[in-house]
Image (cartoon, rainbow, N blue to C red):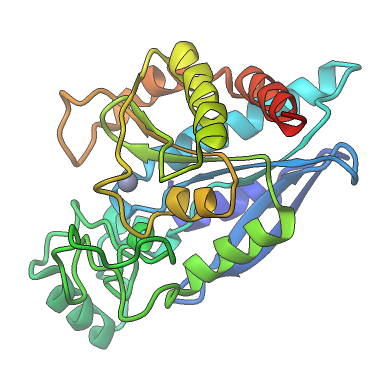
Length: 291
Ligand SMILES: [Zn+2]
């Protein structure tokens, strides 16, 4: 979903529990939108993000469907969730537009800068933001470790010159520190896998693994250990704060990028039960508080 479509979507949301707020700006000055379902102002929060990697913009389509479903749900039930939910449908709107629309609409200078970063005029596989920084390597958690191989602005894998250099990362960091969520979910594409580990202590490891299992059983996806190869990810950073955090890789691995848009149906069908998964995870979170 491109930026204008997303902007129209979030600005047309109309429900007494839902508010849209700008949580920060992208490198090129686009709004980063947060969609807040606030059922009670004393509730704990869940945070759901998508689209941090440009070419994975189908994850934004999923979150838009999940938001639509949740609006319908709260309009039709009497018992509301006992936690609040904040969605960030895309963390990287510049990147998504570069992949979806190409660069022809940008200034000549910016076009040349992006071609230099991408080393190609074909942007369909681009993952980074408009500065050539891979936002999911820019968080301050085992940043620039031995597995990072890209040491200059690039279409993917460059961690930035300093941790949290990028405005998109700062926005997500500030949002997370403000809400102090009981879980964060980050949708990526592809592989039908779930990652949760990042050097937790024994108790938090068991808690977070149980939450990963909730999503694994709902989606049919496979849990994979990644902590020893992960660097500077949002999930990684959340875990260092003691926040359970799941990276969910949507979409069957057999399809290549650019990922076929027709797969959104399949992705949605496996991930439409978000609310029930969050309810179960909140119960797990609370059950571990007193241990
Ligand atoms: Zn990704």
